[in-house]
Structures are given as C-alpha cells and as structure tokens.
Length: 80
Image 1 (cartoon, rainbow, N blue to C red):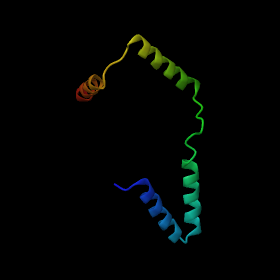
Image 2 (image 1 turned 30 degrees about the vertical axis):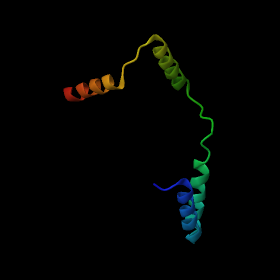
Image 3 (image 1 turned 120 degrees about the vertical axis):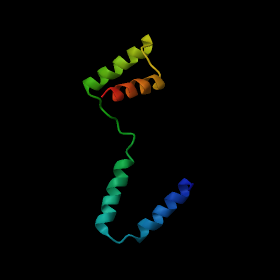
Image 4 (image 1 turned 90 degrees about the vertical axis):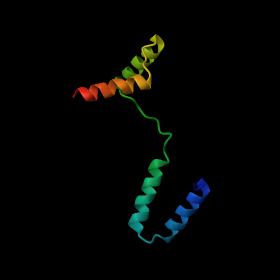
C-alpha cells in the first residue's frame, strides 16, 4: 500500500503535467471544497430532536445489538 507521501508526490507529478486550465480550475475547486472538513454544520430542529431521542434511548437502555438488527431486517425482507 502506498504511503501518504507517495500518493501526494504522485498527484503532484500528475498535476504538473496538466495543461488544461479549465481542468486545473475544477481540480482547485474540488480540493478547496474538500479541505474545509472542519466547517460547522447546522442541524435542523428535527435532526436535533432525533439526536436527543437517541440519547434518551441510550440512557434508558432501549438498544439492540447489530446482530439482532440484522436478523430483524432479514426477517422483514423475507416477509415481502
């Protein structure tokens, strides 16, 4: 598996060989938009409510295992 440095250097070499200005502008926008991962995401009132309900379920122990959920989903799919 390639290291991060190898991947980065390979990308730099490829970018240096690109002559198409429009392609480079699009690539710049892609890189710029993906580098802002730390942007604050504003949740809707409904999303906040769902998260609060999930937190309450966790506190009260209303949980099932992934295995149980998979079994339940398979049963539901087979019933269709």
